[in-house]
Image (cartoon, rainbow, N blue to C red; front, side, top):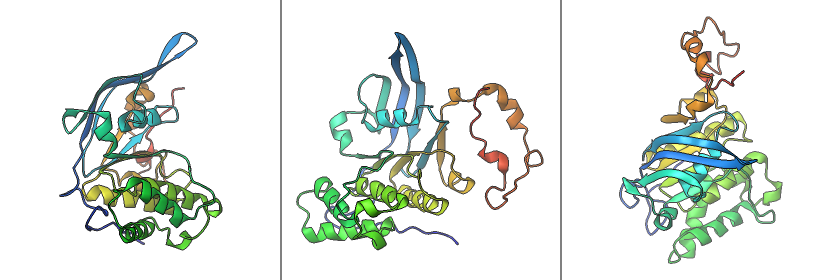
Amino acid sequence: MEMKPAIVSKTRRGLPLSPDGSRHRINLTWKGISFSVTVRKERRYLLQKLWGSLEAGQLTAVMGPSGAGKTTLLNILSGFHCKGYEGEIFVNGTTRRRSPFRKLVSYVMNGHYLLPHLTTRESLCAAAQLKLRPDLTSGERTQLVERVLSIWGLEECADTMNNRLSTGQRKRLSVAQELVSNPPLMFLDEPTSGLDSSNSLQCILTLKAFAARGYTVVCSIHQPSSKIFHLFDKVGRHMNCFATNALPFYTNVTTSHIPAPCSFFCSRPFSILVAVRPG
């Protein structure tokens, strides 16, 4: 069954708007990004000389094995971590300035930071109160909250206390309350972690729909299914985390070498071999 997520339509006065008009389209580029820590007087690089770009209208994945620095990279690019890194970051070709940039970006961190004694609807209302323009009426905020509940499939648990939500519902609420302000640039750190395959697919489909409307969407993701992997427009990964001497072997791998026991999961089993751990 094909899953088609809802997406917010154009409305007036600060409710969700498509970037093709009242929202800026954001292209983010970075050059020579490095980040290091000192361990026992030894300097160790978590990121080293990374170059890349994020484009409006695309859903980008940052992939790599555990400890590759995916979260560190998102922290730097989103402006959450502003000190200690080397390199340059540009917004639409201009050097990034922290204050104006923060108004254009939303960062959904990995984890559930929810107030336990609020309901789902109350959590979104509080987020709307804090993040949206103060001149919006109460009715407009309520309309937005109901739309967000619908987009992320939270209507059934709208009046449920956060401490009684399932893992999947808590994850979707965490994403929804960060994106309630409808920012043109969205960062998400492993938005599918803790979700089952159906909810993971629905989450990525919803983000894909945002990207199709001109938003710039990037997320780190760990071990996506083949179906989810092919939804991304662009995939970035840290090449220094891979065993380069294994590349010639995997270049020549075919389906006859690795039969797929679950054909419904992946028709080309070698396409999901995205990382090789040294040793």
